[in-house]
Image (cartoon, rainbow, N blue to C red; front, side):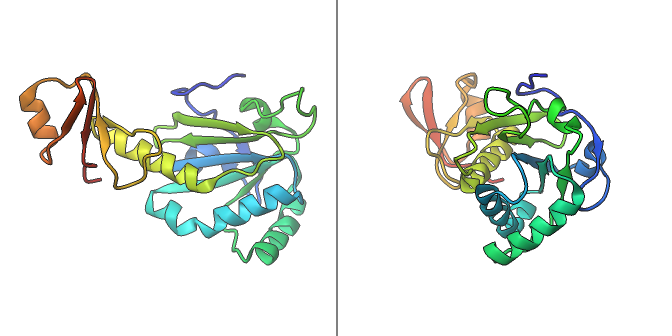
Length: 212
C-alpha cells in the first residue's frame, strides 16, 4: 500500500509498550509523529528514541504525540527502553508499537524487500489532527534521523495550516515567510499581513512571520 500526502493515515489496533493502542482514538485532536525502526537493540535507533524522549517538552508545546514502531514484541520493547534510558540519559514516555505480526508495517508500507525482507525501514510520518498524512520521509538503516529538522517541519506545517504563507529554504521559526502567489488583492494583503511585506519578484513576496 502506497501512502501519499493528504491520505488518511490508516487506523489500527496493536499492542505497544503502553498496552493496546487504537491509533485514531489515541491520536485524538493532536498531531502525531509516527516513526519506524528496523529492530530493537539497534544502535542508531537507540539514539533516535533517546533524542525523541529528550524533546518531549518541545512536542507537547506543539500538541504533537510521538509513537514509535518496531517488529519486536512488547517484552523486548520494555528491556530496550531500559537500555535507552540508561545510555541516552533519557526517559522514554511515548509508546513503541509491537508489530510482531507486521500488520502496521503492511498498512504503512514499511517493509521494502530490496532493503530487507523482514525488518522495517526507517520511515517517518507526520499526521495532523484530521488524521491526514502531512509528511513522509524514509531513511536508510545507516542514517539517523534529524529530529531538529522534524520539529522545523512541524513548525512550518502548523504555521502554514492557518496562514496564507509558505516557508522558504532553510526557514527557522521566527524568520520571514513567503506570501502565497494566489493572494493579489491589495485589501486582502493589507488585512492578512499588517506587518507589511517586501516584493522581490511579483511571485516572491516576503513578510514577517505571522503570530501563531
